[in-house]
Image (cartoon, rainbow, N blue to C red; front, side, top):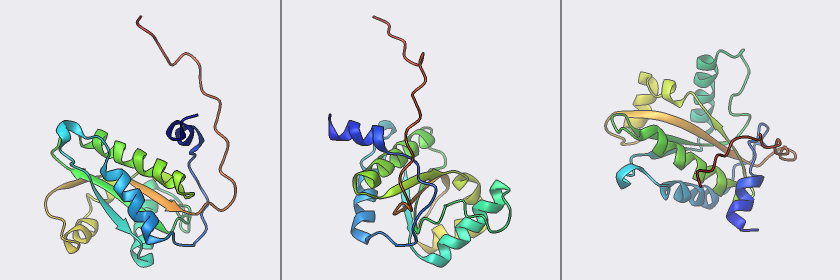
Length: 175
């Protein structure tokens, strides 16, 4: 079977990570894969904020927890040590689609490198807050950005879950 298709079929969302930080070189490869995602009109609107600083990661986790309405102590990033946050130009009409393709590329790249990943939502709500807009400014990011998602990355703590059976009746051929 083609290796790319095999990775697509095998990749699963990981909900328990070891605390060990993946090598920077692996994160750079994952980011590069994300940057090669297709985008509307070739605009390449999405950007990626790579968070490996534990304090920033933990503040983001707390903000995400509050937005999600979970009880104190819950980590919506499931212990993943690295976050690759995808944002896109707020006024770009295909921003969500473009950012979603970046997220998909990065999750597949992580899997291909032996790392686990999961897409965590609420980046849109986080990056509407002044605290996180300030983080972007401190990194030199100018303009208005909409959060698309967090790609939480790390080493899986345990085996990846098995894929659920695919639902039938989801393909229609017009031949």
